[in-house]
Image (cartoon, rainbow, N blue to C red; front, side):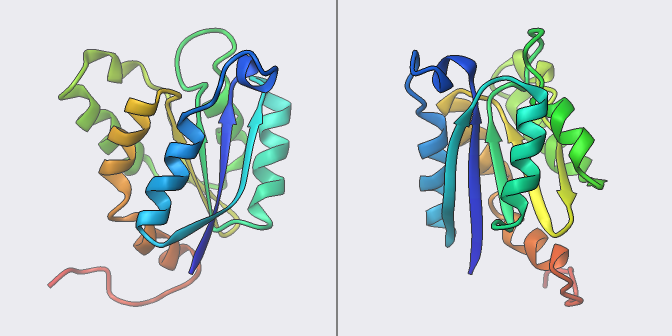
Length: 161
């Protein structure tokens, strides 16, 4: 039903010096909730490239999930690029991922991950480690389909019975 793109942000991965495990992990998790991955790419930690890819991928995707570049090093620019692309932020999703992460590690509070909407595409930033991908996606996978329906214009009641 919904289509996703996975964008791993890693200069070393892009250069072939590190194998990306987090991107394929995202695709596997999305498949379990019925979302097909139609694009998977590894790009360097470059704000202009990330912005360009987010916009480009929005033309073929209902959902874009990024991995990597959410921390504090000078080249961690994924949230900055995402913030410059999105039209509406969804802070609750990012806050929920950080809050759940704090139950496991105090380093979760260092994540600058952003979640938001560009046109009719949901964009979610995740940390780069496979463990963090699993933990963060576990928090939001239940609401992703509903969020996508709303972004596409559904006026069905949001209340749960």
